[in-house]
Length: 503
Image (cartoon, rainbow, N blue to C red; front, side):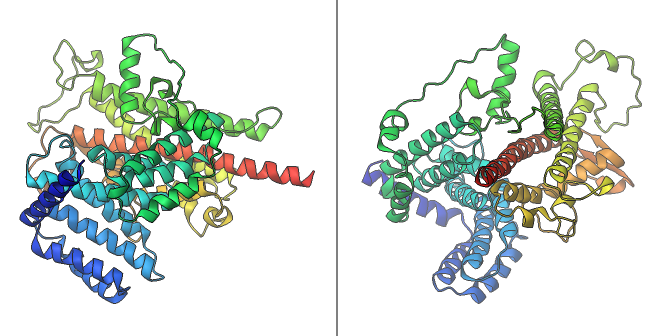
């Protein structure tokens, strides 16, 4: 982009911003900036209260996205200028902004035809980047990488996203188990560093790039010349048939393979579930138990993932007598006129959702046993293992393990009650859907009824909601399964080092 093109772009953004954005929301943005510059916590808190009250108003989508972004950055500002730490709300409102964006504008990456679309995408690049930074800070590197990639998918010239992505890949690469994984992470890290160099005039401060360059100076010049500066040579991976190819492509696009490198490189060789526990299974019976449990977790994840694929991709949701499943034939229902779907396919989709949700309980059991938390019986749950009242609080006992911190923050994506801060606007709806599927009456309909309140106990959902929530659960599962392996590896490496010192 030439200097003139850049100036024209900035002018158009300014004009679009003023034409579509609520004036008070613009003023609040400036007030927050001034408060932060002046380290004025009291004014920030007062303005934050007004911003939160404005969320109830019926603004257009870009204004609402900007307002949520303002609220999230205000919580971030308070964290930097006071001792008050509320990362949960900071992350929550960044995600709230992106929920609005993804539902309304996510398809408009290539051409922005209206002022609203251009401004929504302009704000989204900043939201994704800031959320990525917050996620990196709490150790959730996989989500952070996703965020930076999403920002660059909107605007490849957004230098703050490529710079922070490079930083993140360097840090996360150091935590990988296999040497080839570390090498690939460093290669992509260096790629985004060099890309940011070409965009350095777009950076807020040049010192950011200098800091990254200093970090990467750890790489030996020969390593830079012979590997980092060259194209990757990746192994070939062939599939047996088109059916398998279609499956692997779809799962890859949704980043659901248990291969850490699939987060950074799109290639068939990474369309596999290669991650395993770094535990020796020779004569150590306890290690064999853990490996066996992990094998079970992987297969249950694989099954839930395939059911989600089968019911949302392979099977046509509009079935006829010739295409419906044999178990549905001659199955007599009373038509209530509510478009409810009682098909075999719809029930398999529910099974996928419930299976994905239940695996977190199995992971909780693994964490409880490996990290010796001390819970027993029915007290073991994915929320309970992180609480302070357990016999051996994990977040305190393993505070130096960055992957334990990552898993701790991931569990904040799950709802338990209103008294506990969560980091995900979708946490409570997913929790309620699971509760309704397991214990109540919930029907899948084509269109949600306008008069839902007349029903005494029946709840309604749509196939899209189940499919979307299952996808979210599968992504969380993949993330924590990888973190679990890396957390165990961190502990095993630490123990090995202790043994060597003792010898």
